[in-house]
Image: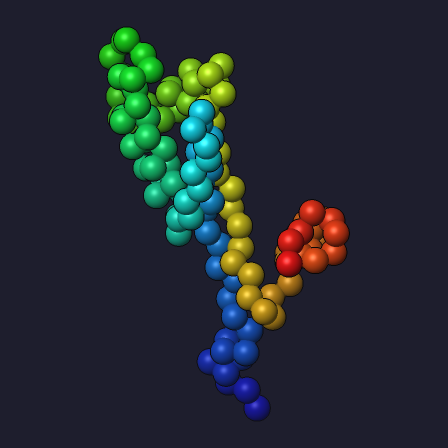
Length: 110
């Protein structure tokens, strides 16, 4: 009979990550974080670094600068977005049946 620890070893626990995408006039930067707070901290760092290059007024407080910066930069085609993704292993099936499966011709790659 399998113990709980044996069962856990047989079926890996799906791990989620937060993929952050920063699109700007020089290209696209993508980073992967273990939690949403880390992704939002990157957004804040970007906003703090570039605020004075883009705007003449003083930046908003730390907890607002990321949202404000990217809201104002929409008209200049600069975007920041995040998405939650599962790390897929060889025995893991997608929880989302509508997502394209790699190698099927539905937008996936091999």
